[in-house]
Image 1 (cartoon, rainbow, N blue to C red):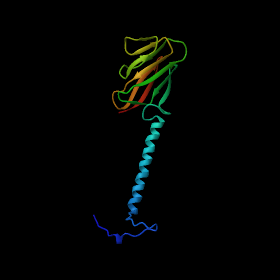
Image 2: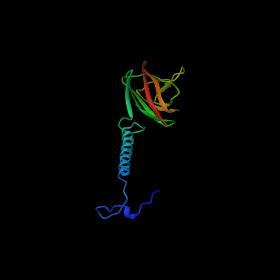
Image 3: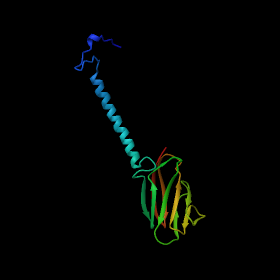
Image 4: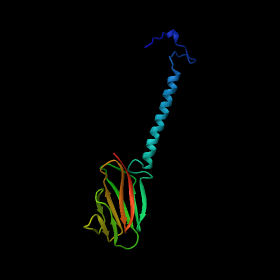
Length: 157
């Protein structure tokens, strides 16, 4: 470390005698502004709902086979999530989906088909409890009254 005697440090206009490094201070302030912008971006992404539960863009709506499917865009690994399916018109309705990512189905009355994970509804609304097992991009192919649609989720750790 270099030693500087007090006589080598200039006296500022306000009377203080402080050793300054303006180049370092400008670089440090620039880094601070970039960090604050990054913090604001993370908060903005969370408020929009692009990092998990809640927010403006948390849910997406899809139409298929006379059904309106409302599902989250982002899931968490092993975290609870729900998708709702509402059918228009009188039943019975049929919803087919793979068994893996769907933990449970809530609707009354519901009959599970023995050939797979098809759900036959006498009512017009059901809730799917979803669970993602690994991070990445997950796709859930669904058929509502025979019309296919693919639900895509971003799964975060």
